[in-house]
Length: 90
Image (cartoon, rainbow, N blue to C red; front, side, top):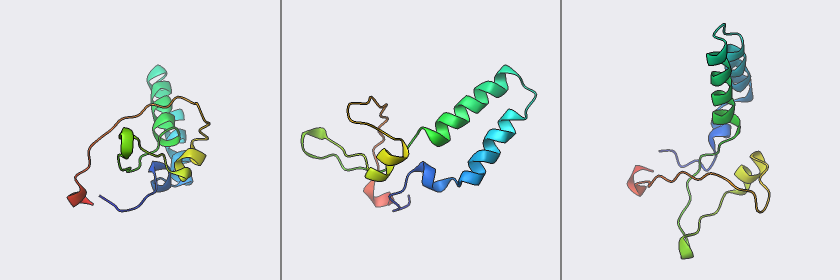
């Protein structure tokens, strides 16, 4: 696992995101193509992946860079999926 503090959006260049979306959009697969476009959009533009330490009272912090990329506002609901990381893998 990388020690980088960047999220998924840092890993995939903007040009590649555009190519992925165009590839899905140019497909002749109708409804399946639309579903693929939605999945790609959500995967690459509406998600952030980062490591965080569990703090007092079981709290975690969302890095400022991820808050800005996702344009999160105070009180906004987000979906959280947690995966334990073996610190020896870092």
